[in-house]
Image 1 (cartoon, rainbow, N blue to C red):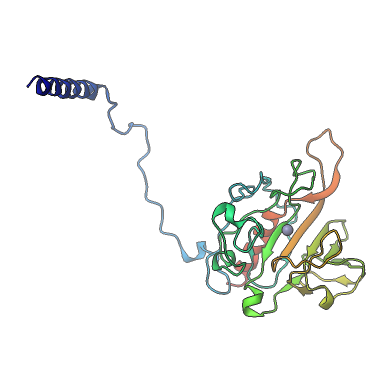
Image 2 (image 1 turned 90 degrees about the vertical axis):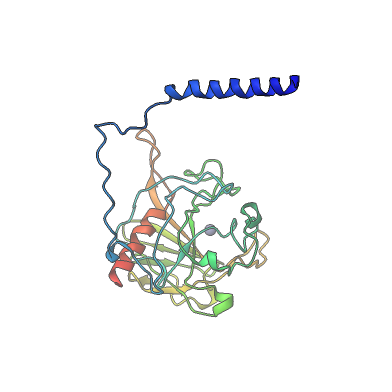
Length: 276
Ligand SMILES: [Zn+2]
């Protein structure tokens, strides 16, 4: 009986305490100055950009990388607003290392084949300054100096041809010593590097002038390690863009890789609009 009294006393005390708190709670009335909330207009079909297979294009903001995959580089500059997107067909920017089929996919629970359907879908994700052992002006802690682009379909599954094309008019630099990189330099000095194309079947020659949109070669997996052994990477295009860049007004510009992500978003949106 004594125990019951104690329990009742505790219950009553806590009930009174909770009642006492009630009058102090702020009133949940909207401030008279707050504008009335208007429902968002129903989106028009034209607000969505769709690719050739009807998928709606979307992208994660620049610099927002997969968890535990590096600091990224929040550069939203559209350095080259008039380029052609460097692949002819639909394309998917995302990590080759930290997703399905990559060496570190398990960090984010993405274990499986490089042909996993989520690798071949939107949203795009930036991979500039993804963790690497190499230093670069934009990635001082070490990082990936370009972005990785998957083709419209996973080549081991589909055996499809997916062409990389010239982003601008320019000259091809692809000497025979270049094992997995094709460079393209424009008249004003902008330099692009295309990596991992099928190098023994390029459709351009070293020194050749090409027009914007002209085919260069097929997206492939050519890669060699530092010992010179052929070690295939995932099927993708590694794409770099060099510009004169200075981090602040007091520093002389350095010709180096900058983040091409928003330049590519802009080019892809224009391409999808044009194909509507
Ligand atoms: Zn890459």
